Image 1 (cartoon, rainbow, N blue to C red):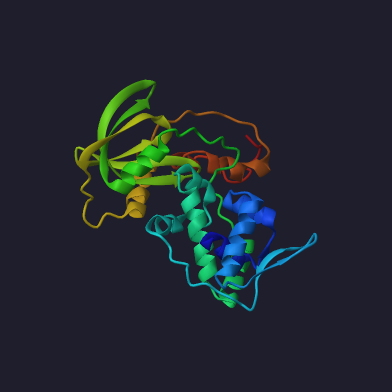
Image 2: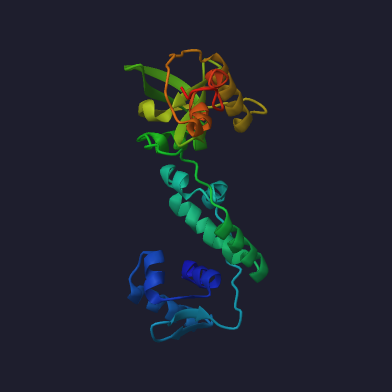
Length: 266
């Protein structure tokens, strides 16, 4: 009933079928809950007809908007519903979003709504097919609980078992990566290559002043600077395609790719 009340507070008015779908209950259950709220003194009004539904009268607002601990942890993914679903945080994120919106004043809610209408974050690269990450939720659980894991990792077609201390998960250009410590050395693992995860009893001791964003930025720079594997090819392309082609090759090869037409397009 509290969730139903928060939905009405955020949306202003909603039909019985909309509330039933949002709350995953029957329309009869919605009707009974509304009757219980009215009996408790909450001014819920119902109107009939195609544009009918339930609404709160008189600017009524509830203060029952406390965000739970799990919901608070999901707030970092506001605007990133897809990654939140992959991590198993979809329901918690939705609950937190409803409570945050319900706690806003009318003007603040209008401002937030305008922002949501004008900005959208899409972390997936163009023309990319997302790699399956069946072990992502298990790794996320280990990261949340600061627990060591034993994982089976496949690289170059060969599987190996590793015990690592998970420090964080990073979504980069549509792919998930695990940042962890192995033998006190930082390692980065592509989550799509993890075949199994076993949660161990040993706790993870996070390094003092550890910053996931800075650590990932450093790991990315190292990879881009050290990766020297290259294959030289000669292409015939339209001159207008050169800037896009240049962005597709690794950093160390971009300088060798022309950014504009030089004589014949090659």
